Every structure is written in structure tokens, then in C-alpha cells.
Image (cartoon, one colour):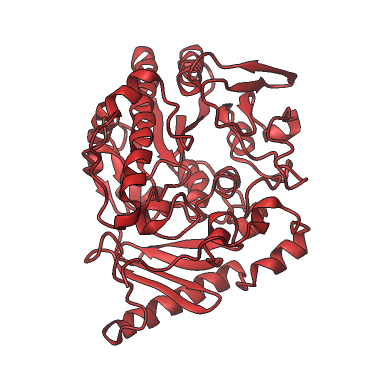
Length: 458
């Protein structure tokens, strides 16, 4: 069974045509959704680039693999998804943004560096670059060659063509393959999509989410024009991959996943990027296409699948053993229709350390749960958020302390404590983790508070 795993950077679940966003021009993605399982409540439990990627590679939570802020080096000898599938006879490939080599200087010093073969975590074919957001002048390294090369044009297109070539070369071979394609967009900068996509959104009216406060609406409109232009370009990139799958006639023998590493606030709740536990930040698209799951195509499954769950779920779908190092949950019985959700499944939200926008807005690290119906979050001052997401989908009515919600708050708090105990998570002050791991010098954890956040709906 082949696996093609495609993930964008900072593409929130709400910003898809199949989820009802009328700003989106995503006909390819929407057609794929009609023929896939839409995992409607997939999340990024630690909604930042490096922690997600480390969890994707290891099946572990951030405090276990140690990458709980950006630019921390992931252990190069970890039991990675490439090593596990490779050990079961798979060819493995990775193309695109990496962001797992880390910058031990705490000041982005390795973001342009060659990533040594050992740090490529066992992928046979590796065309990556630690971190760049210049999508039109984008370098990469290939396997053990320390000389940088350049993607031609907008990198997501060049990377998609390379992935399509890999598919054509490996389809029908003696060995199955695991191919991971990591797109940099729609992560900011937001005005750098190819011109024809930017023209589509130039001066275009944008339908904003109701939780964008009045003072942020003009900036959000401007930003989202660029965001949606990147998304429109990615939709055409997806078409390149789907054509390769169709041309090689491997669809029946291929699990295709299209998702993202985390979302993006873009003015919702008066915030700009990610890090925070509101839905725009944590919820991600997650389409799983596999014709062998008969009767599931076009269906919706409300599963809170998170980054640590991806490796075990893919292994479960392939009926391969899951390593003991993995902490995530295997959701494959739900995808096969052998088990049905009962409604109290919950993703664990973990932000051990406040950094970047959290610090600049005076917000703390947190732990929380995202169930199908509720979001519940604690910070170090105590209970912080409680939203009934079914009744309040834009999360403008924080129910913490509401006497009518005391019972559900107590229930969720108990469940959160249980999940933390299972993980051995003591929920320490973030500085203690940084001191323990020698990370106090990192630039992003020392950002000053510039403008404290206040709930715009109170």
C-alpha cells in the first residue's frame, strides 16, 4: 500500500471551499473531498511548525520528543516514520520544507544550512530545506549533496512536479512507497503567490469570520487576499499530484492524505498567526482518500486526530505494527468503519512554553482539550477557556465561571487532568522546561510583551 502525505504550512480548516468558505477557489480540493473521508475535527494540538513536524515524524507529544518551541533540533536517531516504513520494505521520500534540524544558537543560525544525511531521519530520497518563506527564490538540498540548488519559480509548483515525477518512477514497482510533500504556503508572506493568483484577489471583497473584531477587519481583509491567493495556487499544485496518481493507475493501492501543520488566526479574536487554542489556529483540513475504504468516500468523521496520531493511524491502515515509542492513537478502526465515535473523543492541546505571539500579547502556555463539542483550556492562572463550539462556532462567548456550565467545566477539567497524568505532564511553568533543556537563550522565548491581549467580546 503506497502512502502520499501532503501538508501545507498554516492552512486552517475553515479556509477550504468544501467547508463552506466562499472566499476559496479550491475546485480540485473540493472534488477530492467529495471522494474522500473528511476528518472534520482534525487538529494541531501544538499549533506551531516545528512541534507539529516533530510529532508527525515520531508519533510523540512535544514534551516527549523535546521540540516544543521552534528551531529545536529533533533527535536524529529517533524512531521516525521513514525508518519505520522503510523497515517494512517501503521506499521513502520527503520533498519541501523540513524545519527539524533546528538552530541551537537560538537565532535561526541553521535555517539555511545543509541538513546532514543523519538528520534526514531515514528518508531514502530527500529534497528539502530547513526553513525559507521566499517561495519564489527557494533553495533546497538533495540527499548528501551539500551544495544548495534552487526550485524553479514558485516552489510549491516545482516541488509538486518533483513529487509527481517520483510517483511515476515508483508506481508499480516491487516496493510500496511513502512520499511526504511539505508545501511552504499559505504561510506568510501573504503577497507572494504567482501574479495570476494575486490578480484574482486584488481589491476583492473578503467575507470575514464574525470573530474578527471591528478594529482588525481592514487589515484582515488585506491579509486574507494574499492568503487565499496562495491557497488557490496550492489547489493547482494538488492537481499535478492527482494527475500523476491517475496516469499511473495506482489510486486503489494508495492512501492519499491532504492536511496542514496548523492553522492561522488572521484577525480572528484580534490575533494574527497561530500558537493559540482557538479553532482558527488549531483546526486543520484532513482529507483521506483511499478507494479500498468502500462506502466511506464523501463521508465525514468527527475524529480529533492530532499530529502524534498520524504515524500510528497510517501504520494501522497498512496493518503494520506500531513501535512502542509512539504515543499517538491509531484511528484506523474508525476509518475502516469498525468503530464509531461516541462523541467524547478529545484531542490534547499542549503549549508548554509561551513564545512569539503568545509572549508579545501577554499570553501564557496552556493545556487543554478539543472535543467534538467543547474547547476547554487551562493556563497557569487556572481555567482560561470554555466554549460550546456547537452553539458558539466562532468562540465569542467564554463560559468559564458560568454557573450553568459548572458541571461540564468540572467534567472537562477532570478529563484534562487524567490525560496529563497519562502523559506524565506536570504542567510546569514554561521557564522550567527551558532551563532544564538549556533553551533560555532562544530568541522566540524572549519576545517582550508589546500589547496585552484582551477578550474582544467581553
